Length: 599
Image 1 (tube, rainbow, N blue to C red):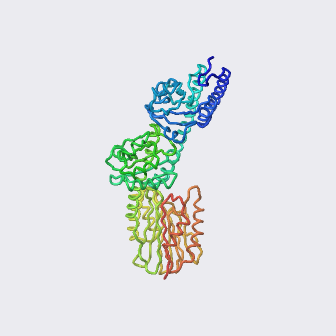
Image 2 (cartoon, rainbow, N blue to C red):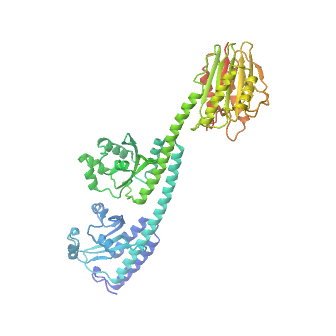
Image 3 (spheres, rainbow, N blue to C red):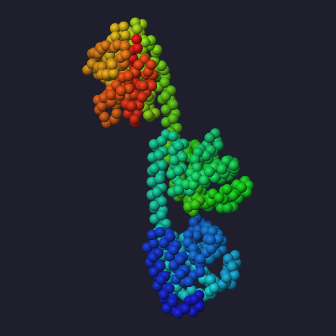
């Protein structure tokens, strides 16, 4: 075995010692669990063993970039200067990557000849070795060592061990990268799951997109912005960064120097074309070219932007906005895989936006329809307090609840509430027809048993709906009487002197099963008495018996309505009662009417 010239004639025993240490380092590389373990071994320890003045470890990013991930002996200025550089710049490291062969420079004269831009007048010995992928045969990076004040050549055994060391470094790097990519894929899937849940749970898509932007930082981006098209102009909906000061800086940048929508590149082009954009590396030349003035360039540089991608937000075939991820402090560089991830997120967001928009439109239609089918106002009844609350369920479909109140020529008051089978527009229309038919039949005979029987006959010949429930109440103030019939409906609740009870005769089924006998319940109804009519949405809850709901209503009514007087705002009290009693999930519409005699 030859002695190594860079040591100026060291004995072979010294070389053997180095070989042993380098072998140990190779074993440590194989068991490294973090990138820091790898860089510390390949730069710090290897330099110490071989007596190197400097060491640099670089990895390949994209086709033409090398990024420095570990150094030894470099000044902060050099670390910054060579943090990232083009593979086409002639250096020992770039040559090692391009040629996939070791590069050995034994003298400063040889260095001058091959790399004149690197000359600093110092005698040196330099070696750079590629980090090779065993699967693709491509160089994934390189490691270089510099020995100041020395000349020489590598001992063949040491070169073999160094190559073995770099092979282990490459394999470890690829293993760590694969583990990181696997973890990143898992994190992306988890993020997409959380984002999808947030998008599905909220129908305010603007607020949800703001949340998505915040969730993306800092795991997937140092910056994330959401822009929406408004009359053809992109307007920023949200900007997220871990540092609020930088968010303000970005807003200042956009306010003082708004981007030109006609300029190639950027979010405006993505919005115009509907095609995603990837900028693997944001160079200073790009910033200079885009800057409007020196101050603009200064602020842009302070943001430290390194890489970016923008993807379109779509609903169907229409672009409605742009989602942008930017890398800065993290040092990450986006790739085509990152773009695919962002496009997946944007696709899910687009579906949520479309659903929210459809919900809003349907909700508006439902509200308009509901308003046309239900009475706008209850009639003013002299000597009576009449209150009403109607609450639509917390979903898009309208329901089939219906109700009305009429005064008769003899001073009597007839009121009814009902609920048809089903939901949606068909149910609402059916409810409207039931209400109209009941109003007509009231003019023929308002007595509840006769009215209920007339509805039974209607359902036999021309049913507006297959099935419906209803409660009818006829007030006769001249005789202080109340007559009620319940057809498969929750019973009216009567409050007298602060004490409540349900008014009902048993054995009266729903409308739609034929003509049946419907007995009336007849009770006194004097000044100060109060009756509640309501639909089942007030008392029913999923997984709970109807008796529990009726008990809850009775207790709340005694507490909240037991002390009302002639000056009480009955609508306001009924609103509070509905809030206290109704299922918080609001699975069904609620209609609630109250009648109280004052004279």
